[in-house]
Length: 464
Image: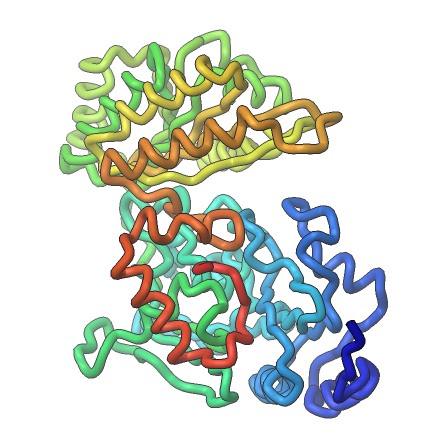
C-alpha cells in the first residue's frame, strides 16, 4: 500500500537539529545501531532509531519533545544504556534521547544532607564526591561504577546495600522532569518530610521513561558511620541453609549493610574467573558487611552463623581486603556470563519465602535439565537466578522459557514480585495483569494516558 508521508526524514531531522542548540544530533547508521541495540537485543527486531540525541541542557530535552510532538515520533529515553530488560533500546523510527552528557553534580550539602545532580552523573562518582565531604550516597547497584543516577531513578535500582539503606526510591527527595508536552515540572524538594499534594516524586521513580524525562535529581546523603566496618564470608551446606541464616540475621538487631548470597555453581564460575579456590568449601557463600564492628554485633553474627551450620567464616576490617570482597561480588556477572548465552532474572520474595524459593529454583533446574546459577541480595529477599545455554544456540531454548514461567508463577504464588530492581522494560511488560491484577493494570494505563496522551514516551515499555 502506498503511504503518502507529510514529511521526509530529512525534513524531520532538520527541524530536530534546530531544536537542539547545546547537545548533538547523530544520524549516522553505525551510531544508530550502537545506540539502538543493546546486548540483550542484538538483532534489528526492536528497530533502528531515526536519530540519536545527546542532550546537554533541559532546553535540549524540551526541543526533542517539541519535534516528537510535531511529527508523532516515539522518544526512547536513555542514560548510560545499562538496562538489563531492554528498557532503553531504540524503537523503529524513534528519537533515542540520551541524558548522559547532563552529568554535573550541582550541589553537595552537608548541612541539608543532600546532593543535587543531573541525570548523567555516575552513581559511583556521586558517592566518591560525597565521601570527600564526610557523606556517602547509599544506593549501591551492581552497576554502580557505570550506571547513571537518572537511569537508577527511572528503574528504581536496588543493589547490595538495600538491606539497610533501601532502594533508590528511599533516597530520592525531589526531581525535575520534562513532560511529553514539554513542560518541566519540579517535584518534591530538599526536605526529609513533605505532605502536600499527591506524591508524584515517587510516581516517576521507577517509571522507566514512560511518563517524562528526568532532568535533575535531589538525593539524600548519609553521614559516614563512626567506627570500623567489618566484612566477611561464610559457607553453608546449600542456599536453603544460607537463606534460613539470613532470615534470622535480618531481624536480629545487627542491621547488616550487606548480605549477599552465591550458590556453588556461581562460586565455581568465580573461581575460574578470578583464579580463587572458594568452591573448595562447597555449598553456598554468604558475603556480609556491618557498618561497625562493636563486640556485641560480631558476637551475634557468630552466634547465628554457628546456629545454622556456617563453616570457614572469615572476617576482615582491612579496607583493601574488603574492596576485594566487594569486587568478588561485582565480578559475579561477568564470571557467570563468560562464553555463554544467558538470562539473569530478578525476583524479590517476602523474607520468609526466600528459602522455599531457593529450593524451588533448584527443582526447576533439575526438571528442565538446565544449568541455573543462583545469587542475590539475600538480605532483602532479592534473588537472581541466571539460566545459561551454549553460545552456538542462537534461539532461546524452549526449556528456558518454560523454566522462567514456572519461576515467575511460583514467585507470585509466594507473595513476591517478578521485578525486584531491574525494572520491567520490554521483557516482562506482558505480566502486569498477572502481578498487579486487572483493576490496577487498568489504572496503570490511565496514568500513562494522562501524562503521555500521544503515547510518545518509551512505548511498549513498563506496561504493554
